[in-house]
Length: 391
Ligand code: LMR
Image (cartoon, rainbow, N blue to C red):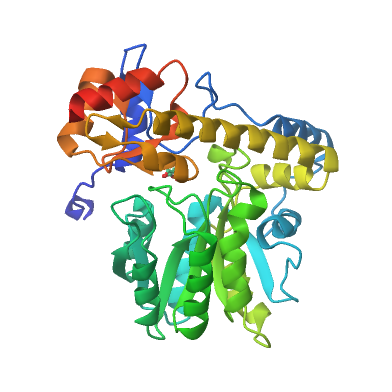
């Protein structure tokens, strides 16, 4: 029976990790999967997380089950950072822990489907796994253009999508540091989006996977908060994998903002049932470490400081690239206006293959680069490579 299964291509982004690992060249450059790297090319564990983990080892008395909602201390400690000064919106927001941001997107979209959503409006390009999750749930996708050719967001396309939506539609938006383009809506554009959502029918699902990697924790949540202030209900998928550097520990959260007067416990009971059927309970370790950080003011300050160091470095790399102006036919100037780990360069498949073969540069097939893979030691090599393959 199992022979009926057609072989599946490996996930292209994850396959790139292995290809890069197996390349013996010492000057190879990894601009593939979205992990932060220091100026030395490392992805260290945050000092605040190390300290929290040490405390966890000392104080944890049991590893007995917690339940499908995971570590609720973690879920609640995170809320002021995500939602701001009124973190429950007057008792309308509740959440649960998920295995990474992917688990949160899965839960949000599965819950939307259970509530009657049939189609998801999605700006493209998007993180490839968004489409994979939606396909796995048999949800139809209606794509609209996320970006304009000049490297700005196509706000008219998202507004048109929202205005054309009906009551069985959801819309999947990136809260900040858009993956893959790095192109975020401006504050004014978020105002327009929030107003359109308030007047329209689509259920907003907002994926916040990179808070703090763009302009700051509050700045990066500003669009999300504008939407939540305007609409009756929304779902939020959150990842701590990048902003706490916990990638492999899979730390995420899923939040529901319910309409005034609606039955939040009933909604959350559906989320818990879906979690139970999907993964039963999320892994605990990373979320427990985040809870310890967020409940300790000294560790919180240390974490925010470490996050700022990451953010500053990524801004510096973006500025350096923009200062280079053009490399061959590639205009690098928009990169300084884009946010987070990623930007997309207009390269053909052949140019991307040549960059890998001739210059040891590993990047996604979409032309996405992870700017954190660039350092003072390799940025000139990268720009030269770009100029050669595109010139
Ligand atoms: C990425 O886009 O590189 C990250 O979100 C990692 C992943 O799981 O794809």
